[in-house]
Image (cartoon, rainbow, N blue to C red; front, side, top):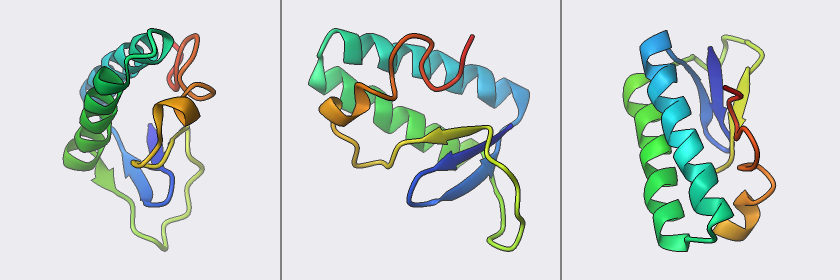
Length: 92
């Protein structure tokens, strides 16, 4: 799966990494729904860090459509409300 972090770049995620990203995505949805700003910031930071650390960055000249677009790292809880709802970024 190809994941784009908005304002950054694209990463290719292996299936095992995708499972962990999906689990964090679901936890971020729960934090947003609970309006828990501290928990949202912690979990969203973990989500971004996981993608960066374990995803394989695509080079800028490698053009691929993104399967998922993650909001920018500086996204606020308020802004996240529209992205992290229901099934989140990655449907189960």
